[in-house]
Length: 253
Image 1 (cartoon, rainbow, N blue to C red):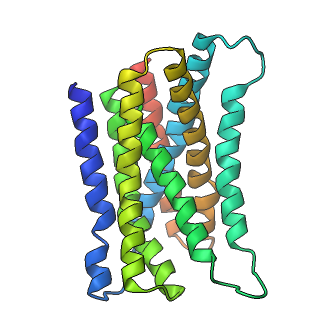
Image 2: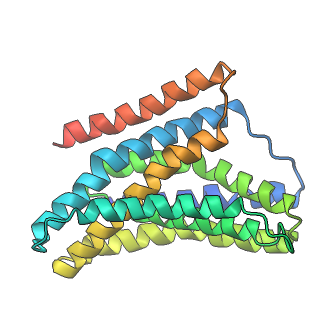
């Protein structure tokens, strides 16, 4: 019950961090992607990468083995790859230019991609079985959530969407991670049978795939500092986040 309480608090804080962007949006303040935000996102990417490799994917494999589906096919690994490919496909699709209406649908593809990630990262936190794992995932989510909302706002403004529509999108986006936390917590708390274990294992495997994508290809694409000293600082932050999750896995084993 104590762990569930922490997850409720985490859901509320994540929601507030996401929706806080509405105030500067309404006041028409400019968003500046500061260096400190880039380092925070690099740290979050390292935590996501570690969560995928040290927690979610191994947990999914263990759960599938306990269910005993009578197959040697690597089902959790396949679901993980599916999550990775889905986000990669959506991002590549957003680069396609339509001759008739070249920009009309692009912001909505971006929103859909981020919503999938927001929901799955929330579900991963909700499915966390220990306080240390839940806390590390919360740190990773909260570290990038505000800047992600700001970046989404900037992209939507660039595509000349109205302020009312952008506000509605941001509110919906802000709800998705808490909704994922609620669903993951419900599955972890009440789904004790075979079907519940199967759902939990599938969510973990799919979330691991989205985490792998966000922490690797997505991070590299949006943080290009090939000739910038900050690139090494971002790498160190990513490695620190990865090491932190490795330590959590070691202490929990």
